[in-house]
Amino acid sequence: MGKNRHRHGYFGRDRQNYKKTMEENQNKDNEQNVENPEAVVVDDVNPTPAEDQTAEETVAEGAVTAEDEVAKLKEELAKEKKEYLFLMAEFDNFRKRTLKEKSELIKNGGEGAFKGLLPIVDDFERALKATADSQDAASIREGMELIYKKLKKYMEQNGVKEMDPEDKDFDADRHEAISVVPVPDEDAKGKILDTVEKGYMMNDKVLRHAKVVVGQ
Image (cartoon, rainbow, N blue to C red; front, side):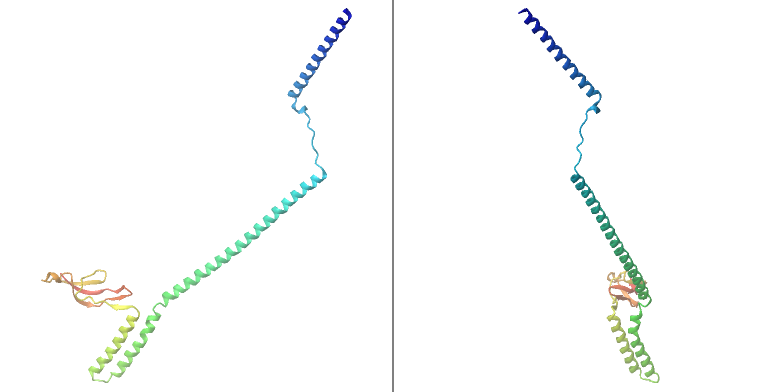
């Protein structure tokens, strides 16, 4: 019995020493791992040849797509630039053509009006020739009245009409007072008493102001 207890005590101490040694070694390993984190080695996973080929194809496909996109953008840019230059050229031609037409219109604006007056001038010349040796004042007057009516009709056809300011209120926008005459009648004050020179309107615009005498 004494021997067994002695042996049991011996083996018990060995177990305790072994356990203590294992714990110390474990603590040392933990301390080394904390101090040197690079000591922990992670095995790299090497890709397979099939995976390498798939990755290369993906990269190549992305590169081709990017090149196509760049080429497409360049083509669209060239097209837009061409259209822009075409529009600029068209606008410049339009501007030059408009300026030319405007210049010609200003230069020859009265061409139509004077062309319409030529037949009336012809009538005057024929009347003067016909009445050169005539002593009949009535016939001369009749011919003059015909020409006058023809001229008035031509003017009306072109939007020119004479004003009729008699017994009208004076309007500074349409009339020009060349004289003011005192009047005893209050109703005649501010009225047009006489027209020295007729005024004319062209399409509701004053072509020439009427020269009038106004009561005061």
